[in-house]
Length: 132
Image (cartoon, rainbow, N blue to C red):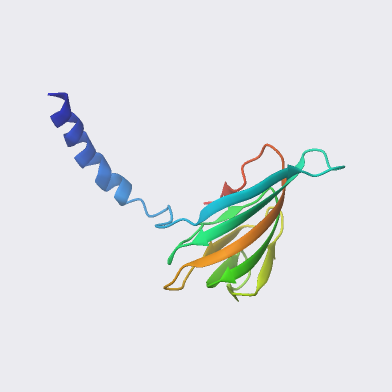
């Protein structure tokens, strides 16, 4: 008897989640390569990562508790920094997002993209802070 009740609840709940357009349809996939303390800078660490961007991937608006330095390996990434026009970066380009700057990154292409990022961040704070 519990299974039909669970199935009925699921049928009611799933459309509500599907209707939530505030979350990106596809998020980039982050593969952390290293996460090390910065000598002489207590409370700071450096994270390096590959980011795989499926076609249509979008981070949503967010900030970082430190600086992000990224290099586009392949594909095309659009960066929307609050208060500035969108900027397109292609394979071979690099970009910097300063601490606390509201931005959104998107793969507008029809193919996957890949970036390499190095972030110098405050320790014990999430890598990104979503912004509404």
